[in-house]
Length: 315
Image 1 (cartoon, rainbow, N blue to C red):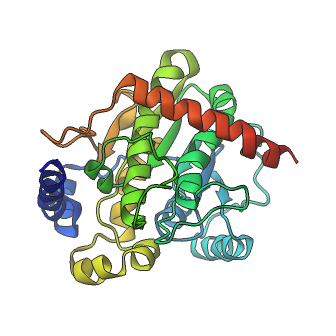
Image 2 (cartoon, rainbow, N blue to C red):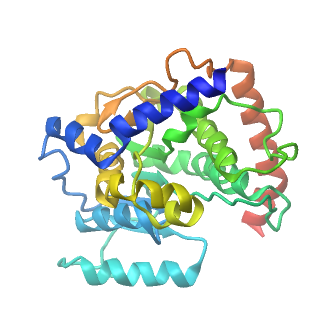
């Protein structure tokens, strides 16, 4: 009954708010000047920046004057995306000749994601969806905390989650989906997205804004027309294509969270949708996590980071 209710509520809110029509309705209350910000001298990192939301965000950060580091899994596609951005954005500077201090980072966009529909392992033996969506996000964010702190106050991290996370309660008993029979990429992805949102709250508490100067935010972009959605959820994409948000509409709140002054007074750890703080649980959905659950998740991630990522990172 719980799962049926979650799906029904998710579908209701999805067609009401997550679509292009939902964006058009919600954006009527947006301040059109909120994204008119000069980012000259700022340094940003965008993961998964070679396509979709990540590429759009990287483009718009660069357009506003930021130095943008694009973290991409495929070097060839990453370089092609970089050349595309340089050809699109007509500015008086380029990434090659800007004088900036590369030891700093002011904006971290955790956008990289995958939704493999078969259970596979990375070359270091971790389930692929979990490795990229959750483990990699946690590892990178922790590695970046000292640099973000040095670059602040005012540094921000933004995690791009998904409305699909509303379907799941955090489950730490099978993080790598060894017992998921049959394996369902959509449900693995939704669980990973729930993990990201819970982690965002954990980081906000652990690295308090008053101490570090870092604001931790997560968000979901609604149902957006991206290559990833077409690739991983082909049936859903074809069924809803006429309702989907444009990439720019999906990316709007990412950019707003990353640098708008309107976000200064929003509490760290918040979850955002269409430039508003929204709950991370549907009403009556019974998806709330315990502190023990979150501690277990973080402990497992830290242990895996030490066992597989730190060795690979330092080799």
